[in-house]
Image (cartoon, rainbow, N blue to C red):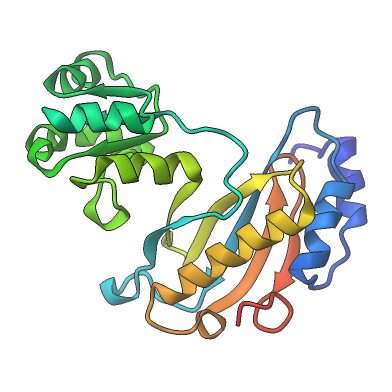
Length: 232
């Protein structure tokens, strides 16, 4: 087993083997910051669901109140007037069949989100092998297949995050940068946790089991859900 670096060991020593409230866990992560870059803070939630059952699959989107600390590059594939609406809304790349051809021939995926109008999905659907593994395939359930392209672009730019349970009933989601004020990271995390719980038709505190808050280059601080996280 590869030996952990000295900074990781310092961070591990600072994190006690107990459950933290989210309000305590976030400042602790910031205290043990050793990386030279602005790390992304991620919240991992273990839900009380069985992902093997379709009716218990948790998937959705949430617009974080304080964004993610970076602007996402958005591609819109549409036709006619919808292309102009996408450009005015701030989309980074806009096109139609030409963009489909570019992705097909070049395996081009230099964007963070893809929004498509329903009439273009026949062509976009052929891109599944390229877009699927990267999580870029547009989906009506996440609001990325829509005629309201302007609103979709604005939401993604504002910090809209897609989430879904993996096969172990975990949901991983970024909630901002380590440089954010602690209260903004906490509010982003609570907003996401509340939406995730609501997606299975039950109160969040009934489905959320544990929460782990971590940054890109350090171990996580375990936080207990229900009362200590304050999801209610």
